[in-house]
Length: 183
Image 1 (tube, rainbow, N blue to C red):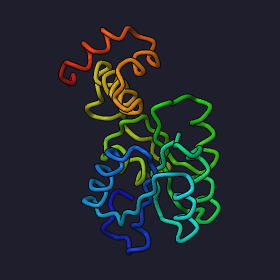
Image 2 (cartoon, one colour; image 1 turned 30 degrees about the vertical axis):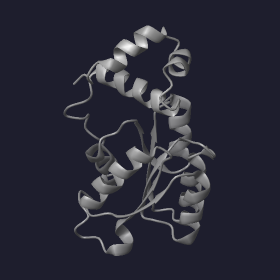
Image 3 (cartoon, rainbow, N blue to C red; image 1 turned 90 degrees about the horizontal axis):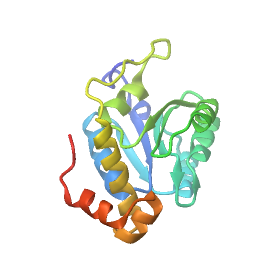
Image 4 (tube, rainbow, N blue to C red; image 1 turned 180 degrees about the vertical axis):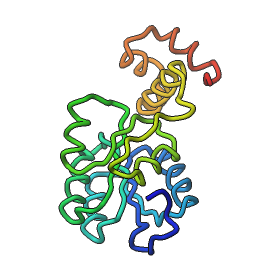
């Protein structure tokens, strides 16, 4: 399966579960443009309710949500619709959670911020074929910058709190935040 053109409406349904509102909005628009019928949820509870109401064919679920673990949504989806394809996104990746996600029914595990094209490739990939590495992966500097920005936003743009959580000097963080994003 490489595109959605041969699928009927019920086979193009996609549930996005993420508590990062700007990311969720961008991803919703991107997936809608690619032909998915998108519904969104901002919490584990809303994701579970959406799965119960009508399990989608596809799901993209953030691992850590404010009210719990996104793997609950993946597990519930797999129980309701075993053929559903779910991708887990996280900014806190490790091997143990990746293995758990796959055991619960996820088809892939991607680090945030993931590109919409990479997510579509993971959702539509043939299970027998190993996916190719991304053409233009983010540089290490860009990944670091994205992580700092994410923590900064989660700390309500509080520089002192962000610096404490990242274990860096406040002035160093201020200099990083004042610069443009690396490519």
